[in-house]
Image (cartoon, rainbow, N blue to C red; front, top):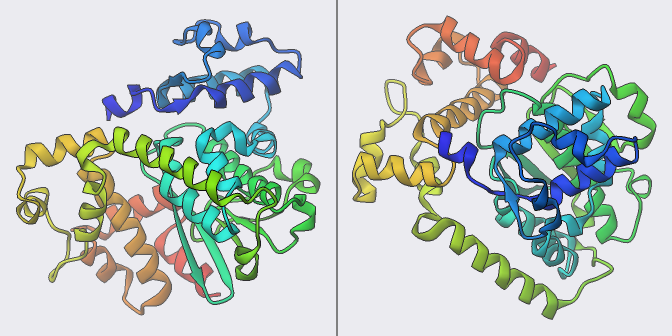
Length: 343
């Protein structure tokens, strides 16, 4: 975990946008960077990157300087597709919005190491879900708000429209409505709170629309650069997380496969698996918690199993421990989640 937090993986362009926003409020870059563990010279290097820890500390500093809890909203609304570099160009030049969403899902972790996207369609609706790959002890709302609002804004830009011209687009948050939402509501697309996850939701017929800058050749070139960057970042371990996620399914009698059990089909040692997961910015325990959370939500929403039985299936000896974990994940108890979802 320490290595992930200190590994330079966040493009400096994200900080440059934050500096731009604060500058319009009379707050200089020097004030933002005061006593922060980042060389100011990096602001002039478009290829530079900062660590998740540095980025988090700078966000906290910006929130303190502005005294604005809704800073994540403004940052997301100001996010430009080009801030993402070659990934943004690959999306903008895609043949369809569907392809742009698929590109975002595949390559987003090149820009946001703590998050990934999952794209899927369900009937007449398309979803791009934001998956949290690491615990976020502070500023969680800022990061989720700005990523999803930036994604919504990019969708509008790709289609040559404004967010107001996409009334059917929605953003879902697993968080309750914040006190500062009302002051921003008129500038935002439709937001829904206390949902099952964090995602962008839009009608499936949008997905076939052609971006205004569609250019097959340019898109292929940008995708090739993304693939190269992905290969350099992941090395030989690009599929290791997918292997572990696929294997983390509940076992007969309750619980999930142990770390040692996951190693046998991969033909590697426990030590090697730990190292490879760490290189990808995650761990067995974090992926286990992710699996537990997803299965807990699914069973509570769609099965008649009592909460005690669900806790057992998830590997909790004491239902109270499950309740505490679920409250930490969602902010509510398993019973409250089930009642709200079913109602």
